[in-house]
Length: 131
Image 1 (spheres, rainbow, N blue to C red):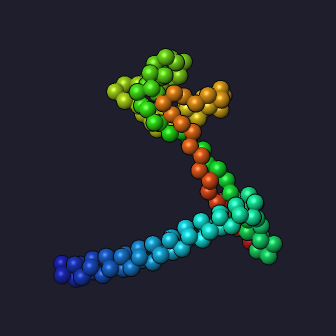
Image 2 (cartoon, rainbow, N blue to C red):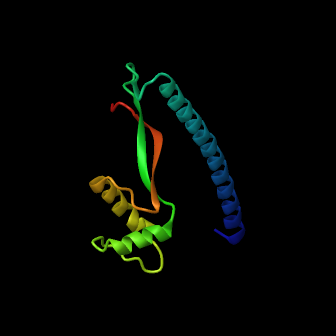
Image 3 (tube, rainbow, N blue to C red):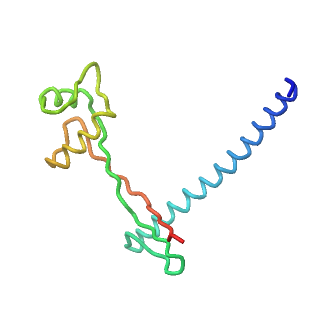
């Protein structure tokens, strides 16, 4: 393939990619709107889950918990005061390493580490019946 043909092929591929992305965005927006409406409808009905008897599809409202660092200096101070933890605060806080430790600490002690907060977000879990 010569250079002009390759350039034309690249332009065509970019055009196809953009069209596919535009379709994806529309589908994703529709998915999010339906998901949000389903959560509202379940909540209004006082339900945490529902099952379609015909298809076997099940939808449930679940809660995802995460630890959010709101004051890094308080967290670093707490880490220094609790040397039993295998975290080394060098220049700053490694949030990727810290988060599982904070979750485990909360689970074992029921305490939220100073400088953090527990963030809870509801989401829809949907399971289709296996065929």
